[in-house]
Length: 138
Ligand SMILES: [Zn+2]
Ligand SMILES: [Zn+2]
Image (cartoon, rainbow, N blue to C red; front, side, top):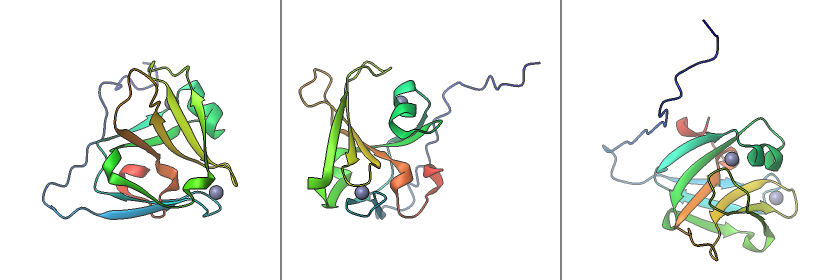
């Protein structure tokens, strides 16, 4: 038996806490603290992405991404420090802008390209930037 897991079937971890109607407010920042954001409520989904572009962007083996609706995220500080790199060659085929802090280089957000045909209101957070780890961020 090969040791690698064959359990790749839809392993999206949805930890919906429907019992708590009040939405938790969490905060996050880049490494230098110049960019700060707050996020309300739970993610639509989370993905551990091992694609080549996420490896390049982070310099790590994978990137942990939380998918939220646009309205759940608010940049509370340092929006002017965010720079974006247009990642046009994604595995999903949806062009993404990768937003990073221009001071410390942390990956913070990913957004679909507003000029693209597949633009949506999904706002992805690099979950490693959350101030306090959450069950779905690890
Ligand atoms: Zn920074
Ligand atoms: Zn990826």
